Length: 574
Image 1 (cartoon, one colour):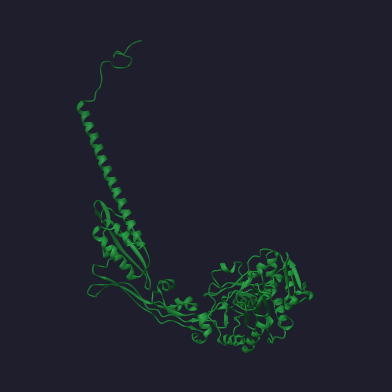
Image 2 (cartoon, one colour):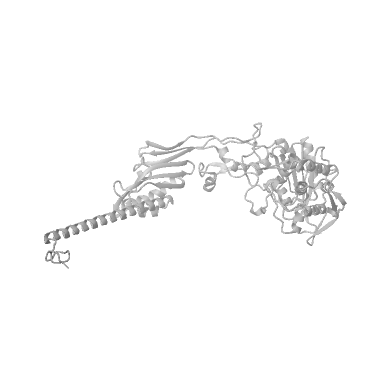
């Protein structure tokens, strides 16, 4: 094989190219220099990152401690020169301003030029309102660690050393409760004053906080009843100022200013004529007998009268919890009519009936034999209604009770009532068994209601719409209403008229045009058991519910105890 002229197979012989020594040295020096520069820059960047992170941590920690109003924790983030100022002045500042709540937000944290961060402080000052301030949280290095350089200007830029923050307030004229014609209600009726309107007084710190940020300790405001519920409207808004004042007394700047707004009157739905008629009727009860009477406008659900007997500070008319007895047959009858039953539906009114081993009986063991639903309602036959409930579709009774504003929650678990003050509606717990369901059919078992609730049920029977009762001139925006089936109402009216004309309330002296239902509910373990007597119904535009007994003594029978009270009430109304 031929060789090339270079003595190999295409490859030169005896010649090599080497890097010059001088050039190699230069390359090494350049590499070292570059590595050193990169290392320097990396260390510098690391220091900057660490410094920034530590600055952010300082601002975050200081702001978090400030929001908690923890001066001791704030001082740990402050410079040695300002730590003592923070420990003493921050608590003093918060106390003098009466800060109810505080929120602070900070912007981007800088650890280079102008170290620190912009902050926005929103403080709710009890009695003054919300004050917002924008300032700067300055940082300085102390022994290589970022610290907050806290000064008066940190609180607000216009505050300098030696200045004071001064707050002042001016209270407006308090509104009053009035009727639709402008009549002042307060002082007109002791019953209303004590059990509905409530009281006013100088607030404690806790009461002021509960009333809202516009009020402070010592302000006169609503303590109970409607005075408390409508305090914001009645009290208006106090005028408020927060100023910076210099050491020589000069006003440097006004940080917060709010004009005084007088309170507004609250117009109530009450009618003094109806109220006094109810009081007069209940006054005929024995002095030791407890009772109550509630009257409601059939057309609107507005409360016209609330009366308790005796007047003792306990509003059983709106807060009492009693078994409704046979007055609740209004609900059971509604469920039956909604399920296709009619006034002529046949039922058996025996003296007793047994369900799941439990025996139910009629008042005084009455027995009418085969009767129709209308007669069973008018004569208030418990055993017939037990059998009626057994014929209803599943859920029919619960559906009807819900239409009348009843809750399935036990009374102990209900946290709100129909009115904006302490009040109770009603509870129809889901039956545990067939015997429980049978008892609920005639208002026993675990059902409890207030007289207020029964008056609202009577009003619904009169108008065809259940309306959550209210005590102001106009219904609240949150009022709940339920439309009852239109086909039910005429028959229900026939039933309630029969109670007065030929049923359990016959001969009581109720005026013409009265529709009602008697009830006698048993409670307790005595033999014979104590009773709560009821009569509920409507006449014209007035619905009513009267309860007698059920607190510490027996109330007798609905027809003989409660119905005569309503007869006197309606006679007085005319």
